[in-house]
Amino acid sequence: GGDARAAGVAVEPFTRVEKGGPEVLGDYTESSLLLIYPDDLESTAMDEDEVMEEEFGCLSLASLAAYKGNTIIHVGEWLGDTLTLSMEGQGTPDFHHPWGRSTNPQFQIQLNATFHKVLQLPLPNWGSVRNCLTVWKRTVTCVAGEDLYAFIPPNERLDLEMSSPSMRHLL
Image (cartoon, rainbow, N blue to C red; front, side, top):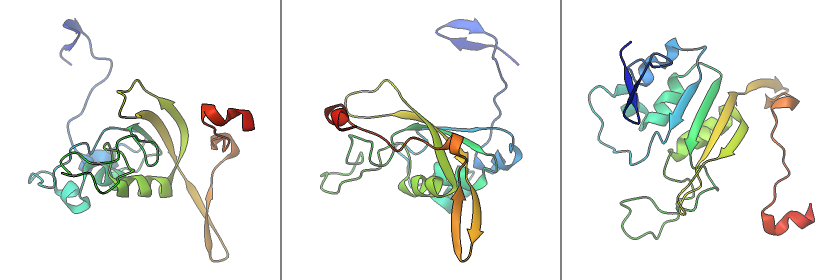
């Protein structure tokens, strides 16, 4: 209930927003999880209320561990698709950080291991970042012999063909 303000105009909210952190995500198995720059400028100092974040080290990993649903929507940069190669506060940027600033590297690895990307859309960006909206579906796995395989339905597989504008003539 209540009113919300958008651009200074009173509007009725289109949905109810619940309060809570990663610890409540297990209750929302039929909902999608939206993460927008969850770890940007993440501090290593955690509040007492952020027990799960303390255990996992950041909001994104704690959320991924607690989430039991099937769809994650992520907004931010991703491994290999960022122009920002150092982290804020790093001092001298001698160490290259290809993960972007929006989400913890371990989250990106774990999400790729348990979900598969079904959509990627570029967003308006400043010149130093390449933010995208991505949608991920939980991956079903199967065992064959002693190996674990991902089952991704053909209609959920992204095209492997990609090219920069300078190389499109090779396709």
